[in-house]
Image 1: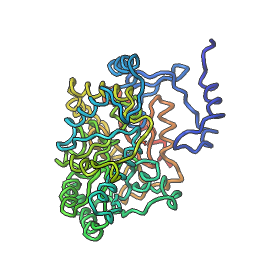
Image 2: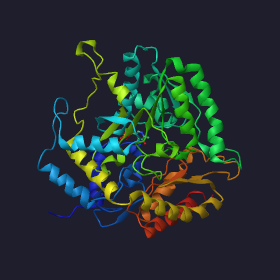
Image 3: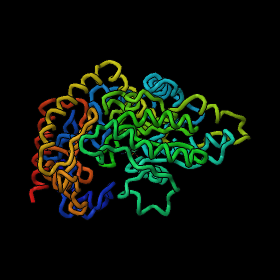
Image 4: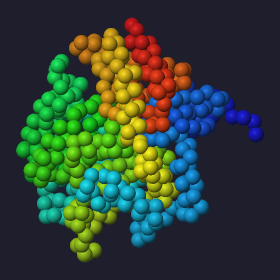
Length: 452
Ligand code: PMP
């Protein structure tokens, strides 16, 4: 068979495929990159060019592409059972994933409901919390409080509880009405104000919303510590501490969407740990399978589970399902991933890597067109700004991030800025030289994108 060329595959792709989150017309000038294989932090195209995956393939990959331990576990599972209906039937990999997650997540999250992607997990959490109050005889608690600049996925329920205009506004007529509280994101703080002081101060807006609406609210949903799709904006754990206390006081459930920040991303296994809190529902996906296969889980408490446990005819059951719920291959990948966490000092290693990354990016704070450099563990972001002092942003239509993206690709690094924010979210198997390359290429890209 003649060897495949990038250009042939790209041409064929553009004739038949419609890609996610893409204005397809961009590909009249932007190359589509066919990837033949992956190894560790590297992706390789059909002509041998390599790209450092500095964004973990949309934040999913934790331990590298073609990880031998995960590969082996999936192969083993493949010989036994590829899939089985998950209603009325079960299997060891799913049971074991649920058992392990119960131990790993904050104490009290004892029940695991599986779904097959992040947005679906958010839909489950939204429906479950609404339905919980109905079963508890409080059907008036139907609404959701969400944060400005938040992101929870693309399906209609998840989109409704999110707040990134770019993805949401066009579909507004299709979406349920939510209560949106301004974000605690610390980019807006005054010079000299600490993250903690700012996040604490912003909480008064949440307290006000809860005071006004708690009687009609089922749950508050947040992305703990980092609003990833919302330009990697970050806030202090104190906000979560205050939120937990206020949700209890106002009898409102708390949903933590740890889909992007879970599994060691922010320096602890789950971001909620930094605030010492336990949400009522926790959504997990992405890194759960090490970035191999789609799987998600909603962890919740025994009292919530019990509110659905009843005579069938009372119609209190949670009748939500997806065909691939608890897929055994995906569960096998999750087990191998959780096994790596159990047997290797991943979190400690990440702390060292995060320190190195922090030192490498620090000089970018002095760049004349950088408004802020920020970091929570293995997520670091550099926000480009038209005016450094006032932080006036570049107009989104100028697509400065795209210039960085193009430059990085030429240099063999996959960076995919969100708006004016260049960020790094590498797999945990990245080494110091690779971190250095990533940051060096980002700096060149930022120079190029802001040189006018
Ligand atoms: N919640 C958060 C916080 C996310 O970052 C994402 C994905 N970027 C989702 C939900 C949606 O997950 P998925 O893309 O798997 O539907």
